[in-house]
Image 1 (cartoon, helix red, strand yellow):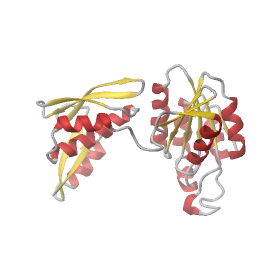
Image 2: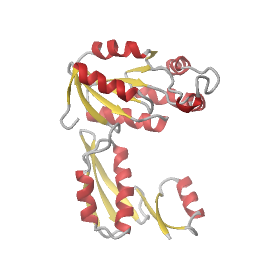
Image 3: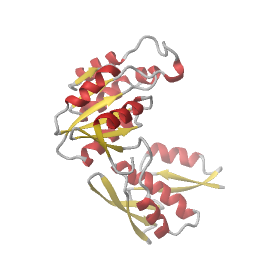
Length: 255
């Protein structure tokens, strides 16, 4: 039987895991006591988390990550649990996680544009977007957060309109590109537009506007030096971010 690592703090995860026990070996982990593996003492420095992973109240390993985001601690814990359950020494897992520098377009610090740090992320649904905003806040404390978000798929945008609008409260300023319709064609879900998302966000108190791609450059170049710019979405916005930093900014090491 193959193994499945389940975030057992969530009741729905436990329910799904219980229904699958005949087909796989379920290993539980979470922040609460009583699971096979417990994640404790989660701390953060400049957005990069450190935590302890405890096996059934016994073996304990400190794990430090090079990638930013509190949510990454739990992603790393899942990877560590599965690797250790397959026989990899926990100390070796910790070393590997410490050396992992992240993936492209996942909280990727691209460089600075006229003193403004630019971070790019693949976030394209509300949970990811909220985590991205919170992570950038922790990476650059004290800076104002300007978000450029490209909604991905009209159907998703339509169904999660309220959730998207709600998670934007963590940005000081939010700007929306046209919806990237991917495989939906030009009329993927009726006639919903980014303007409707902006209207919903404004109703909830967010400072939001729609910008065309041609206007994004002027926006980025006009940001005061106390800002950080986060570009997010699963469409082609990342290409624009690359071009912006290439033309007007200084690249970060390794970019």
